[in-house]
Structures are given as structure tokens and as C-alpha cells.
Length: 162
Image (cartoon, rainbow, N blue to C red):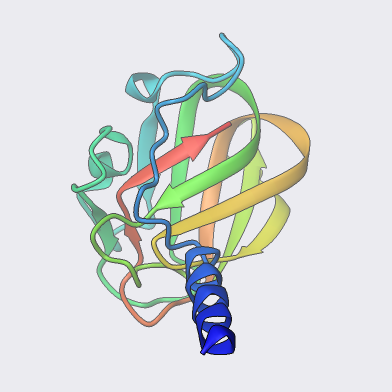
């Protein structure tokens, strides 16, 4: 009986570690003051015709969702911070659509909005996708590209940078 309890505990912990923490709360410090533009300064665009409600990706409400219209590989969302900002972590909260994640996401950066450099590829996870970049980067534009689509449409309730 004791072995069964230990196995059950390990199984529960493994589910919690897979990016599905239901208590995700990002009210703590986000970045050093002045290092990151506030979400109200951002301008968000997406692959033309591929997203609905782009403004929901940064409106501060995890229950409103920007969602792709299909499952296309290469679908992208671009954030213009309005000025160069420093960060090394991106969290994409998928809101009420737990499985609305891309299986693989690329991070591309630019300072002119035209010439982008791919700096990172990461695995998407259900509920929240964390993309941790080893060295801090400074960029005005960040493009998130769905390299491998998931089982549901890509849903972006909030994007956080730190």
C-alpha cells in the first residue's frame, strides 16, 4: 500500500511539472525597472489572416485569448516593444485552452522589424510554455513562430517577458 501511495505522488508531481500549473500567477517582479516596456506600449501583429483577437495576447487577462485560425506550420506572432528591451525568458500562457500550444516554438529577434535572427527553439507545453534563453538579449521586436503545430489551435492568452 505504501508503494502505491509513493507511485501516486510521483505521478501527480510529473503532471504538475509539465507546464500545466493551474495556479500560474505572474504578479511578481517581471524585469528590472526600465529594462522592459510595459504591455500597454506593445504593438502585436501576426501572420496575416491567421489570428483572431491579437490584442488579447497582452491585455492582462488570462481568460481572453488570441487564437490561430488553423494549425499551419510557420504561423507567427510579432511583438514590437516600441523600444529595445532586455530579456532572457518568455512565458506564453495558453488560457482556458490547455492544449492550445505549438509543439515547438522559435524565438526570433530584430531591431528594425525587417531582419530577424533566430536565437532559440523550444518545446511548447500545455497550459504555459516557458522559453528560457541562456544569455540575456536586447531587441525591439520579438517574433514567436510555431515550428511544429500542436493538437489544438495555437492559443495565446498572455505573453510575459523577463
